[in-house]
Figure 1: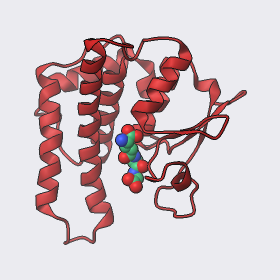
Figure 2 (figure 1 turned 120 degrees about the vertical axis):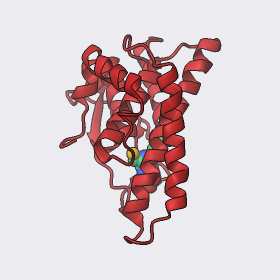
Figure 3 (figure 1 turned 90 degrees about the vertical axis):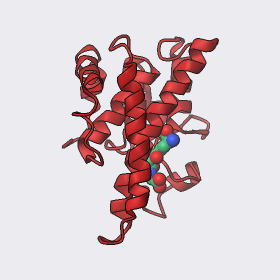
Figure 4 (figure 1 turned 180 degrees about the vertical axis):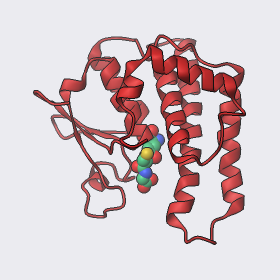
Length: 207
Ligand SMILES: N[C@@H](CCC(=O)N[C@@H](CS)C(=O)NCC(=O)O)C(=O)O
């Protein structure tokens, strides 16, 4: 990811939202311009918290110190730098439809992440089943919407990037068991992984 990098990407290799940016970078051919600097979201001393006050990754640092977040904003920036509309139409209803579906994919991932955090931040025996069920409902309804209308496996766009990273995360951390319930989404992911090499190239180590 180096050579003569211009920008710094604060993210781990395991973050599903960081993976979205790493995939976009590969698809757009910008990987040589970005240097990955891991972030520790639980470390109060990590500069991530000054770069993004929310303390969330991914965060992209530009030459002049500007920090861009979140993943959707970074992907729009990268697409503009690459001089293309490959991942997201520049204007018109198609743009807003794509952004809405991308928000659905991200929200599905975020709900899965909150389920995992429930286990990580609370002591065993104190998990809120009500909270877990609330988040599980979001994941399942989000996936049901994609089951009813899966994206095209090609070409790769912002929706496919978001959905594939969400599914990769659900497969890895397993907050829900989704594959049996959503076979068309599972078929879509299999076809997408073949059509888009950046998906497997950005897999979290050990995932
Ligand atoms: N909406 C954000 C979500 C980013 C996010 O939730 N990142 C997680 C890691 S995958 C994080 O930094 N969590 C630490 C925290 O919430 O404190 C995006 O699209 O970038």
